[in-house]
Amino acid sequence: MCGVDALLTIMEDSHEGLCPGIILGTRMTIAGMRELGMNPAEKNRNLVVYVESDRCIADAIQAITRCTPGHRTLKYKPYGKFAATFMDMDTGKAVRVSVTEKIRVTPGQTDVRGVARTLLEAPESELIRVLPVNVVMQEELPGTPGHKARCSVCGELVLDHKETVVGGNIMCKNCVEGSYYTKADA
Image 1 (cartoon, helix red, strand yellow):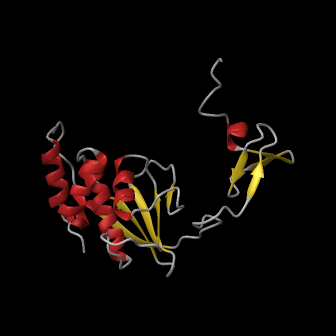
Image 2 (tube, rainbow, N blue to C red):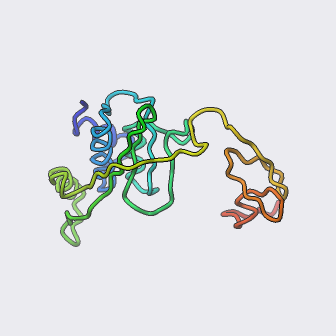
């Protein structure tokens, strides 16, 4: 097994410093992979991770597991929670690891190293919860897109059943829900 200090060194370099989210993400990853019988020091090709936050824990989880959105092994669920589900595609075994918030850092504490030390030294049972879960993967497997559709409004290609059908028309989520961007004046 790869030690916590070695993983934190990787994270400090990758994330450009340590913060509470990096420590939590590292501890979550160690616990999740341990429960699946996987070693963080090795590439685990059967590992898929669903991360429920786009905060620093996601950086730690991605760097340690080497799971990525591009390989379709890191899945983002926008739930805003410090939680992630680790799944072994080979066995189907999965665990959800979440922060319990039983450990509180002193209000107003600004010493990042002190906060990191508190989170590192906390017993795992007071910091995170590991829960066996079942995950049903639907057309989200790594590999070549299994399905493609073209939006009837903007004409862009939509992969992996992410399109929406409105009034019989295939549409992308941007055209249905509104986009995060608008066209700039040329």
